Image (cartoon, rainbow, N blue to C red; front, side):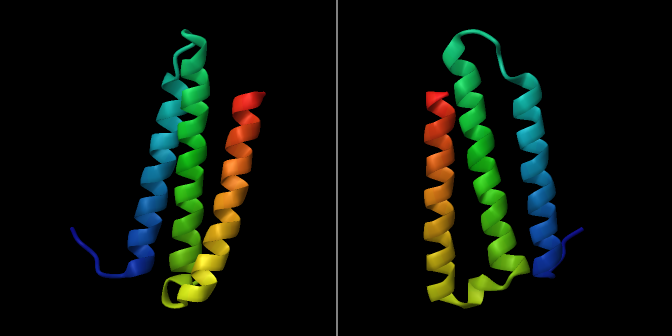
Length: 89
């Protein structure tokens, strides 16, 4: 079954990204110590991707390049700051 509706495709992408993030969190190894940090970084990247899907499809920023770049820069800075704080903690 295929769909051409961009909102349904966005919803399916969000479900898939959530499933991958859940799998990573459940399967993350306890040792070596860096593996848990890497799993956390992967989960943060997946959350960033989900936020991009929401901004682009549900809020309609895919059709407004300037706003998309502005929100993308802010979101990227926030995600990078969260990743650095997570890695340091």
